[in-house]
Image (cartoon, rainbow, N blue to C red; front, side, top):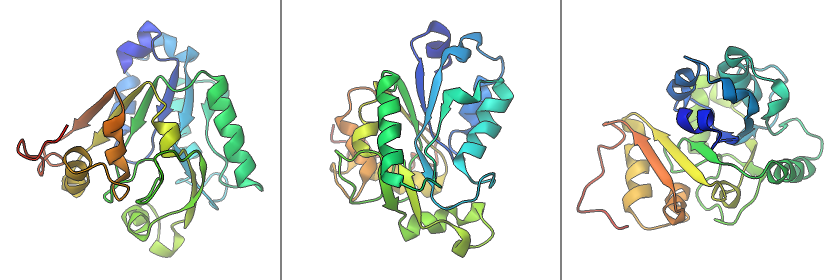
Length: 226
């Protein structure tokens, strides 16, 4: 990714939140690529209903981990507004801004324990666009560690759709820890299945997986399909 930024090949970077991409973001910061000032950043998703400035608001997260440490122009960070009065209009505007920027050169993704990417939960259409949707209870339970209680985890979000994500020219999927092993195995070696949204990545021509041994623990050479 750093090479792509420095060479100018990555001018639009899709950024994920959560714990998975943190080591990658910290690696970008030292040394700082000078050409990063020319990059536009588009976030995958955002919670609905969190107050402005909440530490788990994804704009706050990305400002903390990328914008401020790198001294970036905040106007180059595009994040869906989870407090928008008209969520549908917010999602349409985000799609329009992404298209005007030329589309994503490199999309960074994590994977949920139920196989979601972005907040595209099981059952999401592979042609879905940026939209308002409900969070699965498993996702809320997984994310409760970032909140005071499970009850304080939002129930809804705005997320790029699978169709939007799959339009990125290149995709980098990150996963670590034993809690992601089943999802990784189902995404990589099971059938392409709406129950495992990440499995649709197998229809993309340029996907790289960067996973640790724990996350790879359930992969088998015998189970590989394509």
